Image 1 (tube, rainbow, N blue to C red):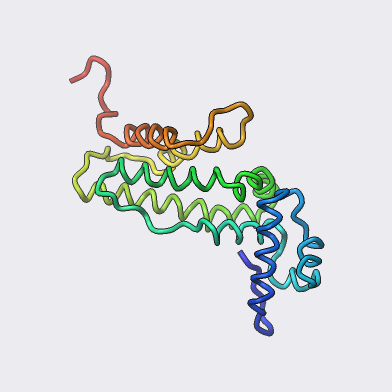
Image 2: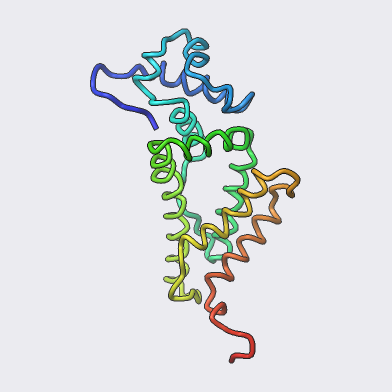
Length: 203
């Protein structure tokens, strides 16, 4: 997200040029080659021009990703399972893209070491996606679907995102595909279902 400061209005053409230059690096060599000097040189600008808009390359990388994938509106397929599958397909498409895949390790390191990036990513990306998940669960409850009363949004989100992250980051793992979207959606649906309250041998 941009580092907006008081002063004369920002030139949108420079802003767009910086974003385009950053995206070109991100889908090419990736985050490790994303530098302030490289970006401003590519658009014929200066470091102060960059820093009037962004605190770091991690901030502009976040803006590029957010502009391409955003958070969108929660799906409304008419069933919770259908909504979960739709959410998973969207996330798998995002994680599979060169833009996300080539930059995720570097962004995760920035999140680990930079409090501002961690808060930005948490508030503007993770939290909004969890809000969408919570909204489709609430909609399912309103439709009368059988959802356990003590459902845990964080747990369900982890069930959905965990396998995608593992396949993205760990070497030798299976591909991100529609089967993964469907299986993880069904697992999350099972976690949410009241049937989870039943115990072996119970009624």
